[in-house]
Structures are given as structure tokens and as C-alpha cells.
Image (cartoon, rainbow, N blue to C red):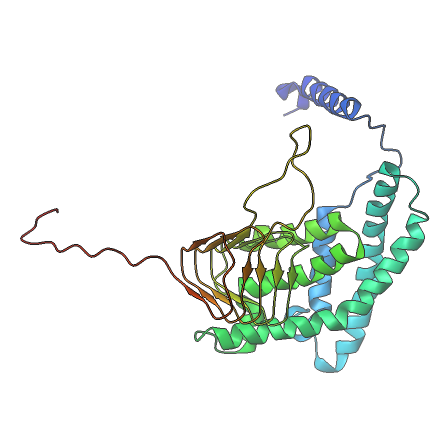
Length: 307
């Protein structure tokens, strides 16, 4: 069956015209020399390699032996960091075209990837604390290995620790791509800008949303469908949403937030507090607070009345 059966010439022409209108409206020239922006597919392969390098005997190749760990880690990082360098270069060069005057993008990309590589031992230690928090926080967990291999919250945090480091180092698009890979796989949406302390555990996980400027302390536990979001969005003179600004909650150390809770705005949840399920909270609470829904009214039902 040939292309003429589907009138492909007309479809291709129409798509070219649509692309041209989009580019002209945004004053974008032709992309000379190939793709100008990072690749989601390339980032997926990079993160997969980083997961293996961080946890070689659990997330590395199935036939890896412990005596070969260092060789595997070194070989993998050589390939992965080289691939990351190419993607970082794409983002930095694109940013330089939008806002000239940022200096040598290639030199900055190399320095950034070197700094990222140097951060990997620290990222591994943070992830170890997250794995332990999940193991100790879930009575159903039989081993730390089960937690690392199976728990969506840990999967999301591996991506977040990587994404947050990239965000801090100045490649927010790459960071967001890494975060969205985990979001698609787990249903857990953590903006790479969110600052999360050690020993963080998301139990079950689906539907959790953590906004860009959220600040989360140590040993915090969330359950499914928790939202740490913004209460309102400032607008500029043209009515467009203003970018930036601290607009998400601060959650201090040793806080537990149960399923379905929604906490909005730049409020502070004091250390050691417990926020009950389905609570809607838009105010700060002091340390040691216990916040729950109002008790349900219990109406007596006699002889079937009201049923």
C-alpha cells in the first residue's frame, strides 16, 4: 500500500505549513545542523545508566558480579556522562541563542557535567537514606532490596535526586525531562526545584504532587494523593502568570502527611506534626500539631428512618 493511498503529499505539505506558521510567529529561524533541544529519549537512557552506576548490583545488568562493580561503574559513567555532556551542551547553547552573553557554552557544559559527576556519591548517600526510610516506614517491606527494586516512591526519588542536582547546576530543561520520566512511570509529580531532605518516603505514591518551591526537611513521610501546591498565582501587568516566587509549603523535619491531604501556599508545617487524610490546609501549624478532619456527625437511625 503506497503513500498515495493516504494522500501523504497533502498531509506533509499541511504539516510543513503549520510548522512554518509556528516558527514565524515566534521569530524562530531554521534549525541548522540538526536538533537544537535536548532529547527525552537520550535522557531516559542517561538516567537508566545513572541508576545502574548508583546501584550496580541491584539496578545494573543482571549478570554483573561484585568483583566487576568498579569496572562496570567506570565504564558506564564514561558513556553516560559523555552523553549527558552532549545534552547539557544543547540546552546551554539554546539558552545562549535566546539570551546572548552567557560565555562559552561548551566550556560551561563540561564544568557542569564534571560537577554533577562529583555529586554522585552524595546523591547515593541521600538515596540510601530514602531507601531506609521506606523500609522502616512500611511494615509490609520485607527487605531494603525489595524497597529499591519495587517501590514507586523510591523510583521517583532516584529521578528527583538526579533532577534536582541538574536544576541547581543550571539546566532546568534537562532536570524537568528527568522528573517527567518518573512522573509518567509512577504518577508521582515532583518538580526538580523542590528541595527535599534526607530520609524521604512516599508510600504508595500515585497522585502525589510537590511544587517547585516546596522545602521539605528530614525524615518526612507522605502517602498517596498528597498535594504540596500553590494557593494562588500572581500575575503581571498583562495578566500573565508571574514566574518564580516562593509559593509552595515548607514542611519541617519528622512530619507525616496522610493520603489525600492538600496543603497550599507558602505555609509552614512545624516539625513533628501529623496531617490527617483528606485535610485541606492553607495556614501554618506549629511544631507537634495533629491536624484532622472535623469528626463526622453521627446521626441515630431508628427503625429505618432516613434510609
